[in-house]
Image 1: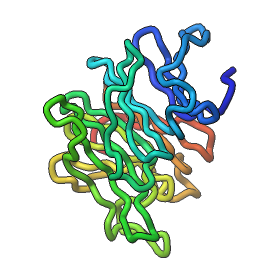
Image 2: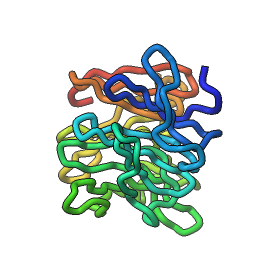
Image 3: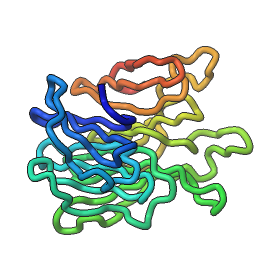
Image 4: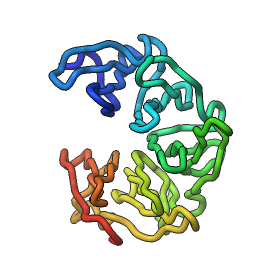
Length: 232
């Protein structure tokens, strides 16, 4: 049992990393459940709502929902090596890494009050341009909280990426949207978008297996839904 409210989880080597809200930190556990220590000291991360790990570089990326940035830690030394996206996010919800391109992806609700659309933001964590904003996929004109949706997103949550695509769970649309990396075009989706018949209701996160299968958490149905790899 975890003391506090666990929000995010990731694994590297012999450790499990868990973001804990009440403690404002990321704890590390063994696979047998023992508390090993902390990636970040209590009080370091205002709201560790999501995390992602580059298992090759040994870096842990923690999304801080209060500071609205991504804090980057060395998984071995447990020290913070930098901050990404400070002052460039409005209501971040999810984070993922593309270790091939050395990019971190952040889903952002935007701001209705400031007329800023939801988006997926891409930042570099390569040493040559650490923290530089690379590009974005915008939900502009696609879905409105005051009306219907015409494709796209407005309540982005968890996301994942492979070599050619970006997968984004949208809690409002009850779908996982699939975007082409190069053109940023919406090329498909998982889930019907109809809560009455869909297996997905308030999808909150998505993860990709090595065979391309997409595993999606469906919060309202309390289930994990699998979609076979390849084009939907």
